[in-house]
Length: 206
Image (cartoon, rainbow, N blue to C red; front, side, top):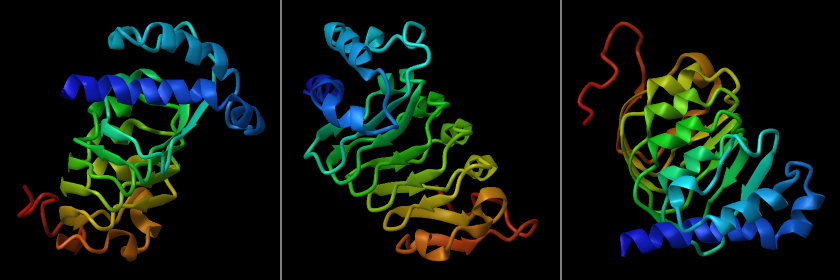
């Protein structure tokens, strides 16, 4: 059943790229997505080959599937969409964890997964997203610490992880210097802003 959910989720995502082409043409964030979507559709039965980024060098893609009543899990194969710039899957019914492979999306500008049922930890691999500007993971069931690697993303302007079950200190260096504290609220186990040199990063956090 889990495998079916994975396949359906990816199929819905890729199919939407094709069906929403008129909207995509009106949106300057998306270019030349038709052939990419078509190729993915013809190969969707083999998820490991679903998206060959070497073949589609230079494609700039945006995928807004927010509030689309999607369910299932985020599949690791999403990490192969290395030219994806916007991944908008907010306000759905997505479960499971955030794949570490999303850290391979080096062109990603916005990752919006808020208002789902996503659990597990925030992968430290997201710190590899050096083009990321918006990271909104609020209103899920995430636990564990806020990865310190995120503070090294110099482009990051918006972070919202409120309404989860995160723990440990709140980062205060790098890109987190200007993130308002209310973007971390309603995480009962968060210990407040990190005190540099006075406490280890993962104190009492597991």
